[in-house]
Length: 520
Image (tube, rainbow, N blue to C red):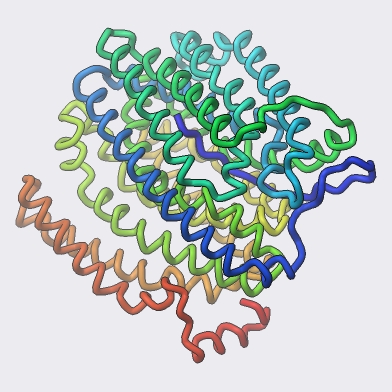
């Protein structure tokens, strides 16, 4: 199972002689290596996109088989609890030190053995703690039968801790072609194990053993693709520098994962496993655009933004273009899944899953916000805005918990979805915009990146709602509605094609450059 992380950034200086090198900050790095970096990023982005699309389509097909023929809402609810705990643990299992492999300049093999030792020790201790407390954690989350699933599934925490160093080297070198092969092997084995166990009646435990099998393949594959990186070692000076670098990042990452997964905990604890199963399915559907598009971008965005961190103008231009590409590719998927939620779920998963459709439109809006927020997160990480990250994630979590608790009691899973959008759109987006502005990325660039896709999304919404009533929800009707809506969207976003290709007209560039910030 491929778990996406929420990386952060910081400094790695230390006064000790053998300390690892600091992060990339020199402007010369941007100017000298820009052409080579651009080719690497574009190549890695293409491989990453192909990888993500193929893997997610495979996961999508697997999910359909399981939902229609093997598992019901209650089993999906147990799986949702186990997956939530796993994701939260993975957000900080290696104390954030694994990101030094990607972020710090110089020869990463000098400090990689210390990173591996720290990562493995912390992951092992975390797993032991989870193994002991699994019954209590499962009961607290309203799913006491999930303890065994937790104990098996969270073996991935230990495996991931060992895999951090070789996987970090692949990310550092933009080796997404090799990563695609590794992920394909992961998918093949994890899917085979999950399906065999599910159809044998093992329920949610099938997900757990499938995840473990896939992570073992990933560890072996990364070790073979980055030979010589699985070498343990220890240097006290390096360890101190790594912990100063990593602990704040691990805290921010845990906050980010808590924000994404606290709704599962709330639904499980207040509404039970069946409602949680419907909610998990709806949330997973809403995550299709996030996983297909955003995950592909995030595998290269952090490394790419890190290389541009020394040039505010290049960073602002790169971020705005990346945001425009992501939003342009995501909006049509979000609109179609929101406007056609019930017929899509009925067609794909079967009638027993239709209750999930009520929450899906709101969760699609949340998915769109998440895509922009994750890109902003990576950019703030790259420029060292740790205080801003803590502020955003902390405010988000503090506001979200009470809102979701009240919303769950008032309107079930639909209320939880609405509460998510209320907090994200009303509080988090403005705070992210302020943080980006302080980092040198003005509102004008962000508005330009989003304007045409949002217009196209509004036109698509009108088309979907206008055609659905007379045409109905049959397969032919869905095909016609989707085709017409996509044509309308394409017409609307055509004026932004030069911007998305990175071609900036002199007049537009002059307007952007004359902003009060000077580099926006």
